[in-house]
Image 1 (cartoon, rainbow over the protein chains, first blue to last red):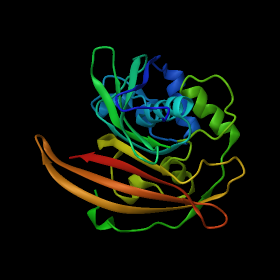
Image 2 (cartoon, chains in turn purple, orange):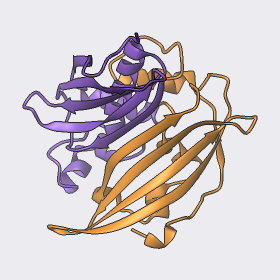
Image 3 (cartoon, rainbow over the protein chains, first blue to last red):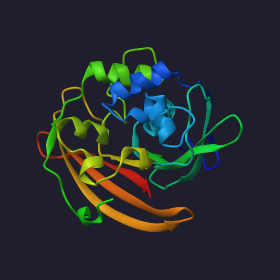
Length: 127
Length: 132
């Protein structure tokens, strides 16, 4: 019997919204020069009401949390669905979709704002 | 978007994990402890820009019209602190679609990361979107 079964909840956690300074730190840490994450005037001109949290920050949350819960990942595929702005908390959930005969696990995950807006979703595998 | 770049590979470059950048990466996500291991998604296409693979310039995507559509990682093994990875980026596909308010282009760019023995460590695909 493996550690995970189909339908198991792997993650259900709220990640506190990133402040502007954290978003700027993440840009430094990923060597991302895009001003849309740090310059509100630039974000305004691009049609957004504020700077954007990086999509890869959501990827980093999901990858870290799944790794802590399940171990080394084999793959992670994420689609960004809606922008995330500073201070917006994200609820990250993941459920086991299938467990193969060799023990490898596939899960579906999503990130949503407190108002229910899905900001990202995808599939990850391990095992 | 310059659709003629489909299939183009860019000159390879090397990336060595930096504990300093990994610390900033972790703190940016709200984790206030220094990472003991290289964060799983530390390797990211953006690191190529500092050494010459500027996708926005290469694909002629104005930053204010650009969106990040998604990412895919396939790991063969975790990245280690002492890895020196050779990165080769290739424009895997560019697709044009008609949206409600104009054309939209979707580009998938694949980054292959190989260790000093030439063995694949991971593959990353990043999906860039340009709105007309």
